[in-house]
Length: 382
View 1 (cartoon, rainbow, N blue to C red):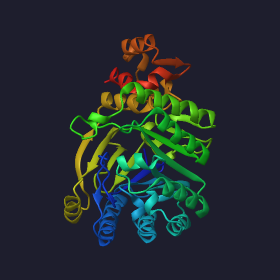
View 2 (tube, rainbow, N blue to C red; view 1 turned 120 degrees about the horizontal axis):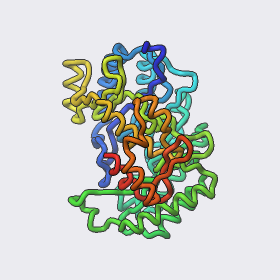
View 3 (cartoon, rainbow, N blue to C red; view 1 turned 90 degrees about the vertical axis):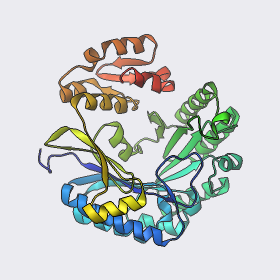
View 4 (cartoon, rainbow, N blue to C red; view 1 turned 135 degrees about the vertical axis):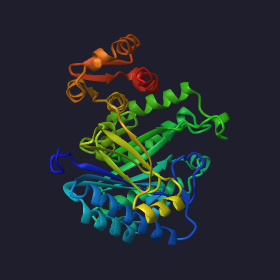
């Protein structure tokens, strides 16, 4: 398949710096000590763009996502440099969707307006809660008032596509507490909401205080019910959107299509003629090692996995089932040359008997019970 026949590509750019590393966060982040670190990081990111631009250049990109970390600690000038470098190497589609993650504490109006003027049209705020005592537990550096102010500032700056994140099952959080957050979210009426269940391992100091599974399930069910009533479409396990405002970039992951990850610790999934089932590869996480690798090789890839057909099939199922529209069985059979219904007959019979999944026409879908116990469903396909 030639470059011009390939579907449009998504690019994820990891900007790892934060003012403070929150206690629950296990992403690849570094606390910012001085602003010169930001320019240095962008300098190396431009080297990586040059390398992959030469490798995959002239590919069209239709989604671009700046994640972190806290991308909003970087300046509009930094974003301008990155966008210019990308545009020299890749073709920007006419409907390119660009998202920037932001912390309410660093998302002031002037910066938001400058980002909007660069062509960025989607902003995603890590609000997590609208209650100060829960934000303090999570070690967030913003307060509830700043969360609301940043949302209003984004609207004033011109943004019409705004995502707000909510975390549930915070230590000592009650169902009523979470309902207050959901109700306030509905009142703000953003175009997109993401809800995440706080999970930690047994060694974490939060572990003795984590919310019981039964209560966490009640919280998730409450979110589903309330957001549906408010006109949101529950289109992915953790995501709710107003019509026409789904996260186009995140759909790349769930629809098992290509995405290129740039930056320290970023992950990629790419397909080429030699690897028709695709290749997963990831970058070095350590910043110093990332810089050294770019100086020496032009890239910072540290791990590569060439997918077999069997692995690609499983990955396709594990990601596709997260979409409430379901997994298209006809497309699956056309892509892999075998029937999912036959290959996983016993798993499907077991899950259908438990009321976890159902087949509607050509779509394999999670039922409400399957949504609540997604991990149990996915284990059947492992």
